[in-house]
Length: 410
Image (cartoon, rainbow, N blue to C red):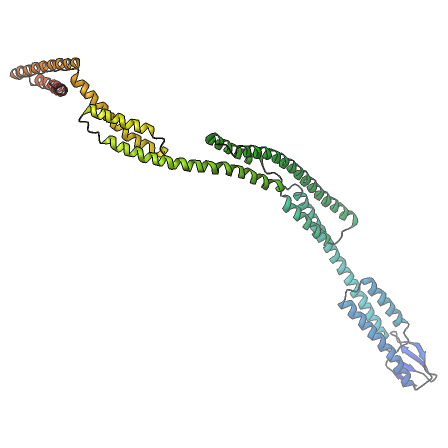
C-alpha cells in the first residue's frame, strides 16, 4: 500500500482522497502500475484543477469578465472540485472558489454602484443638455446657436442610455427644443427673404432713376437728387446676395457717369473763373490808382470805363469774390465822398446855413466870455467855473463849424 498526506492506494488498487472532515472518498482505481504511479497520476489531476482556478482568479482580477460569466465558470470548477477524481487539498480549492465568489460579488456590487453613479452623471449631463437646448431655442444667433445644437446632439449620442422612461422624456424635451429653434430660424429667414425681395424691388427702381439721371446737365438739382437716392438706398436694406452687388454696381456706375461729367465741367469753369479773377484783379489795381481823387470829373469817367470792362468779365471763384469786389467798392466810396465834399463846397444854401450857425456860435461864445469875467470880478468863482464848462462846449462846436465853413471855401 502507498500513501501521501492527501490520499492513498490500498492493496486492491483503489485510490482514496482525504476529505476536510477527516474521512476518505474514492477517486479511482489503478491496476496498471505501482501505487506511487497511481498517486502521481491523481495528483496531476489535482494540479490541473489548481491551474484552472488560478487562471480564473486572474481573469476576474485583470479583465472585464462579467459577473454572470464569472459565476458560471466558478460553478463549473466547483462541480469539478466536488466530483474531482484527484488527490490533493480539495477543501483548499473549495475555499479559493468561495473567496473568488466573494470577489465576484464585491465586484458586482462595485460595478452596480459605478453603474448607478454613471447613470446619475449621465442623467445630470442630459438634463444640462436639455436646459441649454431650451435656452438656445430662444436665441436669434442663428449660426452660432445652430452649430451649438448640432454639437449637443453629438454629445448626447456619446452619453449612456438611462432607463427607457427617463431617457425618452429627456429626449422629447431635447428634440422639441431643436424643432422649436429650427421653426423660428426657418420663419426668420423666410421673413428675411421677403424683406430682401422688397429691397430688391425698391433698389431696382432707384437704379432705374439713377441711370436715367446719369446724363443730366442740371448739375445742382441732379446732385441733390442723387444724395436723396443714396439715402433711400441705405434705408431700403440689403437685397439677396446674388442681386445686391449687381444692383450696387449699376447704381454707383450711374452716379459716377454724372459726377465725372460734372467734375469735368466744373474743372473747365474753375479754370475760366481763375482767368476772370486775374483780369478783375488787374482792373481793381487800375481803379485804385484813381485814389486819392485830384480831378473828380476825370476820375469818374475813368471809373465808368473800368466798371464797363469789369461787368463784361464773367464770374470769379466764389471764395475770391468778396476781396476783389471789396477793392472796387472802396474806390467807388472814395469817389462818392469826393462828390459829396464838392457838393457841400459849392451849395449856396448849405454855405448860408454854415455861416449862420457859425455866427450864432460866435455870439454865444463872446457872451459867455463876458459873463465869466463879470462872475470872477464879483468873486463868484463857482458860477464862473460852470460858465467856463459851457464855454468849452460851445467853443468846440464853433471850431467844428468853422472847419465846415472852411470846406465851402470861406
